[in-house]
Image (cartoon, rainbow, N blue to C red; front, side, top):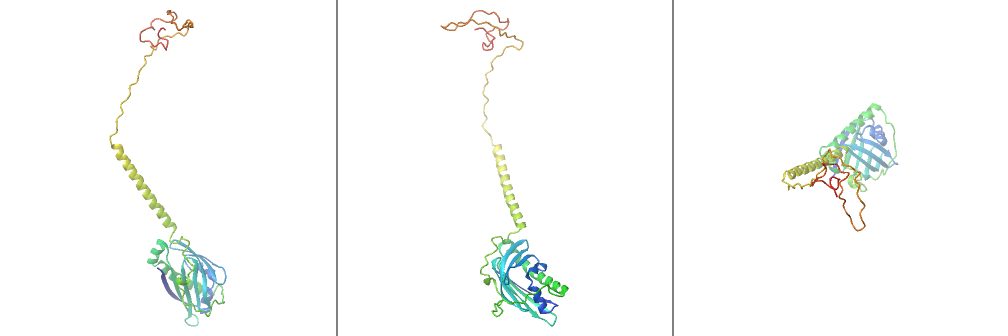
Length: 271
């Protein structure tokens, strides 16, 4: 769905002065709000960079018809889809009525909402008012191009149908910094909700009874008293080749260490 904007304004300068100023396309950022750059590639082609309502757009346009002191008509050939014409009509010896007709195709949610709010229409009105202030305050045009393009063709007022080579702004239309931030915040909100749900679910599972594991018995090995003195100079006779024979001697073992409960591996008993 396309949108058409038609606006006009009367400026108190002769028609040739108003027209000459309008032909200075690279000066458009001086009075067109949101227009950041206009580069004239040749007599017929222009490259535009604009940002309106937070939406950055780029496009190339071709001048389809240009008649000195009367008309400039254009249509986009790439990027943002738009077309239109501006006309100049004398309103006396020192006054001119400037008519601007524009048709464009909103892209993306931001532009569609802005279109319903009439942001572009208000922007066009403001631009014409600034053009009037600029040319009247200066009292002269900053330059002029008196050539013509397809002067006898009469293309009328081009619409978006004439912008047949334009297919949107490379997928960037409708996105702005604020929109991206809002989208990130929304994703973060969904993620936070998911974490909260997982935590809540985990808490419920923690409250459910769990199987109790019985502690295993640990065998305790009796140790010698702390004040027991263990001698490491016990003599043991060398074993015979046929087998091991324990000595019956208790020499070298302090009294009070022997007992049926002593651990022979620690030296508390006899072998």
